[in-house]
Image (cartoon, rainbow over all chains, first blue to last red; front, side, top):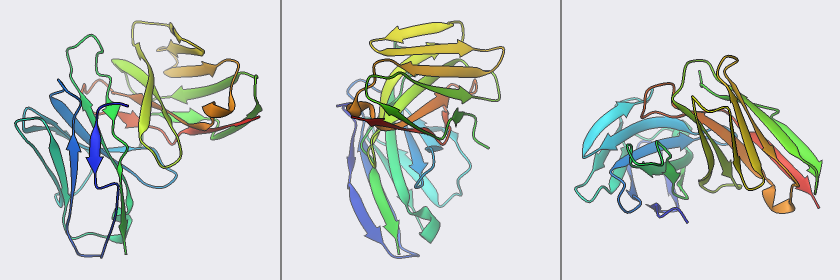
Length: 115
Length: 111
């Protein structure tokens, strides 16, 4: 158990729809990152939030957006869903500066299928 | 392109044997981490090695880092069926906040 929880675990959406995925970070962690993992691939960095501000973004279009709340929980929003958005979406929390360094702890992920 | 690349892509061994998988990366790093992923589930952190470290142990795991060759290896000794999973290396490419993963090594341990 990493203490990082994600919801929902599975969902199916239609192309063009919008989706919101949620993440609660590990207690004491102020940084949340989101990753997309397509089948058979490694996770790809979407973006990171630190103290409610975006703190780095990977090569993803603006229709991928996020929020971080004062309790450090986070949301990932994807608009205008495309078939290629079908993937496992992973949330990871960390607390840079602690003895653990930049170790990131992952949740179990949200499986998104776009049909 | 992804920063880390694991080799081999797939590895099948008998229970009790050792498993070695390698990771190569492209740019300088602050640290390198290894993760395990059981099918369809989240990633479990195994070990972190900093750029100024050359070797690190954790239980049956041994990780080495060669920054001159931009490579790392993960050795799992006395493998068990429960070690069957995909293994990924992740590097921070000196960004401090973005981690790059390879496509992973799929390990199968046959009982």
